Image 1 (cartoon, one colour):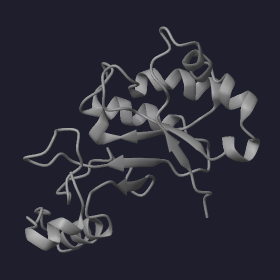
Image 2: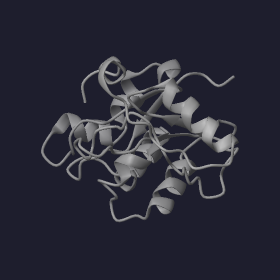
Image 3: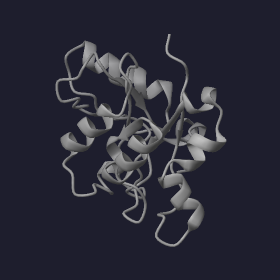
Length: 176
């Protein structure tokens, strides 16, 4: 079994913040974190253009040997000039041999901020021929219910349709 990972979003861009430059250059990771912690650390692309795209993170990933967790939803808002497939493949190349890459999947929901996660997902999740080689973590308000709903649809050969929750069911998922 693979060790659990801790996925972080790096601090603001290093243009004017010295501490962010040390993170970008990998100094914080290589000098201050234990080998055990470093072996579990990953970075994730952000959903704000003022933050880090996969292209931006590639430098840090190389310098500090930290894998990139590709987030499909975040890429829609901060592409860094790369197509989804190019960013996905670049992130996967940062993972060490023998360690199964992790990606995040979430979707927007009508009536919410575009960056907010939906209750359920409808997919399809396109892994560009890498199915069976990548672990997909679903980020949604309904948590495991979203996974079960999507899985049931996929196994029955039909498209997943997001259920509309009302009243008490929606309240259980918490605020947007």
